[in-house]
Image (tube, rainbow, N blue to C red; front, side):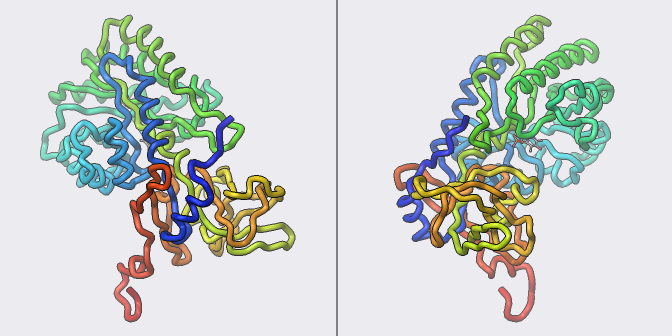
Length: 419
Ligand SMILES: *Cc1c(COP(=O)(O)O)cnc(C)c1O
């Protein structure tokens, strides 16, 4: 079970809303920091050190990235813009991993300029990278492994062979030989085969797969690995009946696997890294809107001033996001579709959901918007992107991104009367 209580009271939220009109995303800073600490504690045994590169796409706000940097996190980037964000926050060098695919040369150049760990998506990118960097590969290069059908035995994995990412197993052997012959000295291996996975044993299996592979690659190619990257994909309990991944359990099981494979083979110490985004910030963001309308036709509707352009996941993936009505915890419950105002019938935060029956004007909180929430926002129907607020506890908060204005929205069009 996961706790869906809120870190702020209705009065505290109303005090924020009095200064920053709804809708807005609000992030619980201390909960994010505590969560990051728990992840690091679970891996404090790693002889070569542990780092989580925060997947910037989950919450690309430099104020949040700054707080995470203070907790020891790096950045996982897959685009030029994300690299620039890291640079601005002072996350540079090997505190960045650049895991991109279908990458343009200028992005590789920026990553190399920052000294980022470059993680290649395909064997053909070795020469592409070399050309992009004027004929010289970085000292450290990592490859992304896609196990394809080799991992099909696992019911919860999805289908890696249908994913566009990564090297085949055979390509890894050929690829590292090629790096070695080109004079690369330091090697990393990465995989990312899950998304929003809640089964802790899944991550242990993935680690075991990487450890076995590293033992084999080290022997056959005759190189030493410095860094393993287990990717992201640790899920969060969007539904109240779901349970968060037990990080301490995952850490201790991965330790057993590390000792049985890496240490037993006489390798190491190897640095263990991850690229979790969602599990770092996802549960600690809340989209706050206000009830504008209630409507009873063939179904009952609650209409908010927030819409799918503020949080796309329910409309795009049918994802569950918990809905609560602060201050109405004791009100009678009623089944509603909770909607936004886009001219799209999938602009619904919840369908057939039993919630505390709100009054028009009440605040409504959509939970777990801290990853792929604001960042996946868009401007369809000329809707504006919302503000983002960092909540530091007990009435302490600040705006870390103001709401867009119509002038912002029209800024790229030169037309009389707009802008
Ligand atoms: C999206 C992504 C992540 C982060 O995934 P989460 O589910 O947020 O942990 C990490 N690495 C890569 C390469 C990704 O594309």
